[in-house]
Image (cartoon, rainbow, N blue to C red; front, side, top):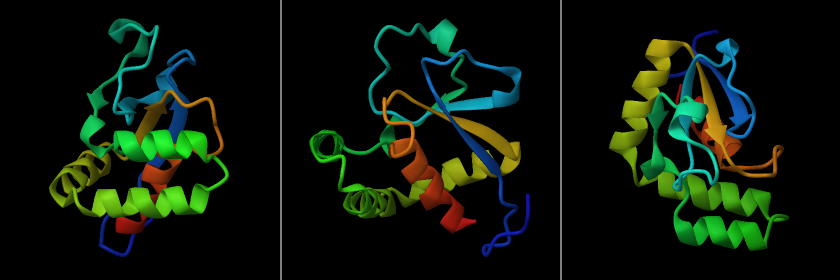
Length: 127
């Protein structure tokens, strides 16, 4: 971890599909989806925090599902949504900063471009 532009220490944010077996290396697990993942019990998911209010809106999520090639546009729209949730973002930044290392848990099949990665990118710009 190193110092960020806001004087905060840059955390380690890992990404992991909720369908993967939780591991000790995951540490504090944060579910970053608006909907609870299908077929996964709360016990099995081992979620420490659920930030459904910071997940993409239903409209944006369904749009991106139909237009997966528009990653940059999705990320920009999602960032604007997050800009409108300043208080919740600040609380999450504080939580992550206190933990130092967290794992964002998501259900998307796309492991390379998903809302967890976009949220990570957004938050790291805030540190």
